[in-house]
Image 1 (cartoon, one colour):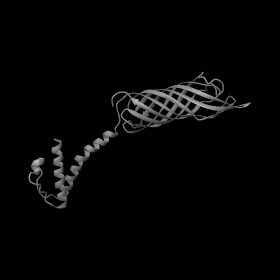
Image 2 (image 1 turned 180 degrees about the horizontal axis):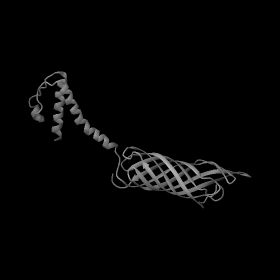
Image 3 (image 1 turned 135 degrees about the vertical axis):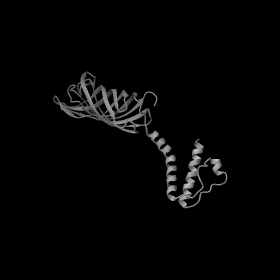
Length: 245
C-alpha cells in the first residue's frame, strides 16, 4: 500500500514537472505497469494543472512530516502524580527588629516535592530547608550567627502551556515554618511561624515524564523572634511524573 502510493506520487510529480516545462509525459515501456499507475494519462498538461498536481504531491508528502514534527513537540498531557527535588540560593533580607540590626550572607535552600498534575493546574506538598549565616550589631560589636528554617508548604500552581516543551507557570503556597528564633544563640528550629510564598517560573519538559523547573519565589513568615523573615529564593528543580506517558 505504501509503495503503491509512493509510486503514484512520483509519477504525478514527474508528469507535473514535464507539464511545467511544456513537454509531453511519456513513461518508459513497462513503467506504468510496474508502478501500477495506469490512471495517470500520458498527455500534455497545462501549467495551471501541473502546479496543482505539484501542490497535491507536496500536501501528501508534507502532511505526515508535519504530523511527525508536531508529535515530537507534544509532551505528556495525561494527569498524574509526580515527585521531585529542588535546590538553589536564598537571600534573607537584611532588617532591623527589636533593636537588632541584622545582615545576612547569601544562603542556600534544598527540598523536595510530591504533587498531582491536572494538566494545567497542579497541587503539591513541598518540604524545604533554608540556611543563612549573618551578623548582628551589638553593644560589644558585630556578632555572627545563622538562621535555619524548615518549612512545610501546600502549593497551588498553574502551567500556562502544559502541552508545550517550554511551560511558564505561577503559583502560591501556604504552610508552617520551624525556624531559629534569632540570629544569635542556638540555631535550633525552636520557633513556629505561619509561612507563605509566591512563585513564578518556567519549566522545560525534557521528556514526557521528566521536567526541569527554574523559578523565583518570595517566601516569608510571621515573626519568628528577633528578626523579620523575608526571603528571596531562586530554585532549580527536577520532577518525574509517575506512570506511562
